[in-house]
Image (cartoon, rainbow, N blue to C red; front, side, top):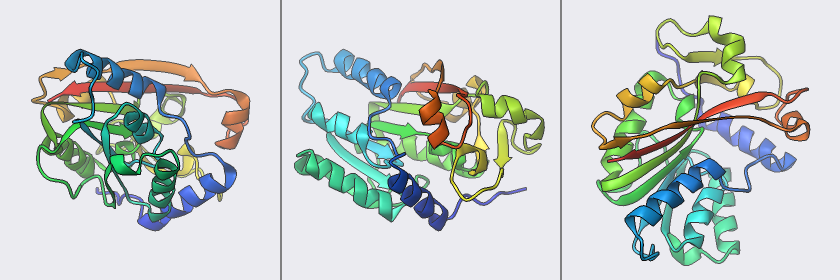
Length: 249
């Protein structure tokens, strides 16, 4: 059975709510940018990143792109939400990085309007997990298409040890192991009601990144503090388990 990906208006409503509550990410994903920093330092020991071009697939408000621009990297972003793209541009311009922007465009991560082999690095954080199996494959195919040889993918992705998955794993979709249809209900947008959600295994990552010269994911497990968990709809802190994916084409 095929499950439709969330329509644009669902993500528009989600981001409008996040903006109103101040619950969208304003800081870069630490494990993701730390891994990118390791890669950049290793491949460019002179510290000159001015010729690099990084893309974020599902850029949100842009904190990961802002981090890259601070390092001198040229940046592009795609997102399905008009609202959050406008916020991303405002944030980057306000930080003085307008000239580092190559392209910010409204698009799906399954069909990115950039040329083949045009980027040196790709960020992805908690986006591909909401695609059905067919579109997850398409999104990773786009990663492969867009990266230059030697370019790197930096992903922040749900791990199957995550508390939400462990509490609901008996409901995993028979046609797509590791995938839940999370429909807890309620007006607010949280992980537990964002519909189709995939929790990755190491085997998933090896298959989706097949052909890359390096596939080296690591796991991070942590608890959100109570005040942040409450913003996301949880009465108590809950355990997050995430993959930090590093892969080199």
